[in-house]
Amino acid sequence: NAPSIAVVGVTGAVGQEFLSFLSDRDFPYRSIKMLASKRSAGRRITFEDKDYVVEELTPDSFAGVDIAFFSAGSSISKEFAPLAVDRGTVVVDNSSAFRMDEKVPLVIPEVNPEAMQHIKLGTGKGALIANPNCTTIICLMAVTPLHRRAKVLCMDVTTYQAASGAGAAAMEELELQTREVLEGKSPTCKIFKQQYAFNLFSHNVSILSNGYNEEEMKMVKEIMKIWNDKDVKVASTCIRVPIMRAHSMNVKLQFERPLDEDTARDILKNAPGVVVIDDREANHFPTPLEVSNKDYVAVGRIRRDLTQDGNHGLYIYVCGDQIRKGAALNAIQIAELLL
Ligand code: 2RA
Image 1 (cartoon, protein in one colour):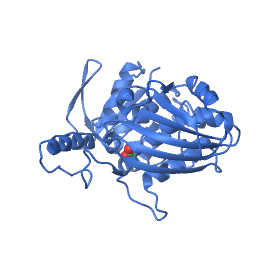
Image 2 (cartoon, helix red, strand yellow; image 1 turned 120 degrees about the vertical axis):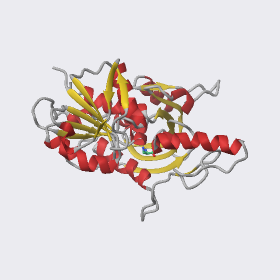
Image 3 (cartoon, helix red, strand yellow; image 1 turned 120 degrees about the horizontal axis):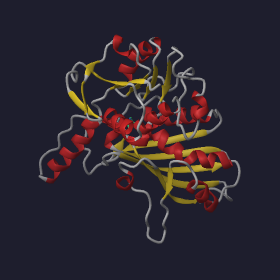
Image 4 (tube, helix red, strand yellow; image 1 turned 90 degrees about the vertical axis):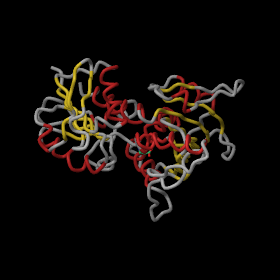
C-alpha cells in the first residue's frame, strides 16, 4: 500500500518543488506531513486540493512515516534524520550532512541505482539515502554515459551557479539588487557580502587549506563516491553568477579510451534525462533560461579538447535546473525506486 510521507523544509524553494513533483508524478502516498521550523509552523498549504497546516519539526514528527524528504539544511538533517531513521523512516536527504558517510548511499537514479538496492520500504527498518549536490547531479547526468563508454581519467569542471543554490532568499535578493542598481541605488547585500547583480564571483562558501572551496571539493569527493572510482582525478572551479535557477558548467574530460565528438554526441542523444542542444550553424547551445523549470539536463559545445592528442579528450557544456533535477526531482526519483 502507498507510503505515508513527510516533507521537511516544506516552505523552502526545494520543499515547494518536492510538492509539485509529488503531484505532477502522481507519487502514491497514504498521508503527507508538512514539516518546517517553528518560524514557519502554522502556515497553511493547499496541496492536491487539500488544506494542510505546516507542523513544527520535532523528534516525534516521524512516527508512522515511511519516507521523509529533507531539504532544510545540514544542521536540521544532522539533528533529525537519524531520529527519523530510528523510527523506521527512509530519509531522502538533500543536504550535504551525510553524503560522504560510507554507510549512506549517494544516488543519482540514472547513474547508480544499485547503490540503494538494499533499502526496502515496509521492513520497519529505517535508512538514509543522500541526494548529491546539484552541481554533481547535473554534471554526472551528462558525463557518466561517456565515462561508461571510454572511462574518464581526469575531469575539470568550471561551474556557473545560479542564485537558487543559495536559497529562495538569494533569488529574491538578486532581483532586488538588479532593480536597485538600475535605479541608481546602492544594492542590498544581505545574503552575499558583495553585489551580485551584474557581477559574478567565486562561490560564497569557505575556502579550504588546499585553496579550493567546499563547493568544489563536494564535486571532487561526490563524483568519486558515485562512480565508486578512487582513481578518477577531478578538479573544479565554482563561480556564482547572476542567474535565477539553473546551473551551467563547462567540463574538460580526458578518457582512457578514444572517444570522438560524433560518437560522444550519439551517446548523449540516447542518454536518459539528457537533451543534446548542439547546433553550431545556429550557434544554439544550452542556456539557463532554456533549461529552467525543465526536468532534463541539456548538453552542447561537444568538441575535441585541443590541448590533448588524438581522441582522448573532449569538452562539453551542460545546463540543468538546480531546483528540479539538481535537487527535488532527483530526490523524488530516488523515492520512486523504493516503491
Ligand atoms: C549552491 N550547490 O549552488 C550549492 C548548494 N545548493 O550554492
